[in-house]
Length: 321
Image (cartoon, rainbow, N blue to C red; front, top):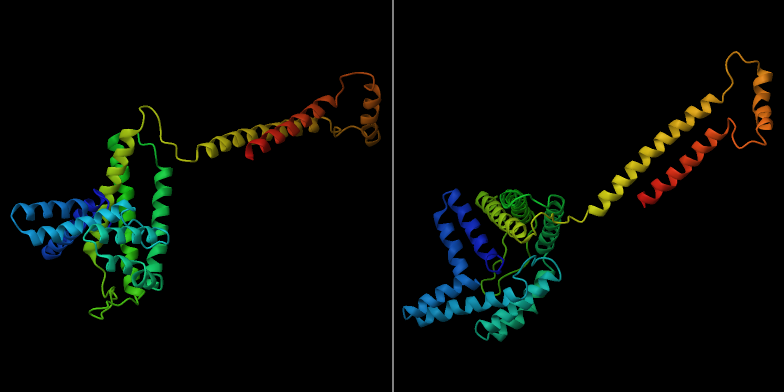
């Protein structure tokens, strides 16, 4: 779960809603219990409540959780934590959080030794990294191609649809990986695998991923539309391509028209069916001799059309580059 404020709350809400949708009340309670254990806002609120009722031990416990979440938030919140570089950022956040949350230097050092090395040798983590990169790239591409909603309501709907689809796709890919690619990491205390192989598909997780994605996408779409200047559209990165494509289309249309005109002019210069072969074969030479001293002759339209064709071809090629 990401540690960034708002996103963390949306993820907890979506996961618990998914559990409730399939009747798993205890699972929904566990989601919020985990949220209270380590989240910047949730752990902070619970720690403050514990302190207010005089529970010093509870206040310290949840205060440490808030500190750990703060460390992760300062380094990206654990987004794309399975992907290299982002994984290192997450390790920075976790180790910083261990120090902020209670000065646990031992746990902070393990983040960069045992834990980091094990994760890089875990095929399950690499499979999830590939899935995360694919889903993230797909989300960005679809968002760019469909950007520029006309109103906040449209942005809400558009963001919700994109977010829900990508959220369900991400959750499905992770569950399928957990069912097919076995992790090789073990807990040093219990000796059990940290990520045991999943035996069945969790429908509540799929629903929760869709709800979380829809809420996140709708919020992001509304926020972008709200800060967008009135009357403008968000550039989607393909404006220049579209302009070039329009120019190229116009150039090709002009080229086709010029070629057609040149063909018509050339057809007019062909010998007629009833004209004797010897006369028709000598006619171009005679005409050329007759008009050798004049600026205009019957070949002039054909030459002019040819020049237009060359010009149009050149113009079309320039706009295609």
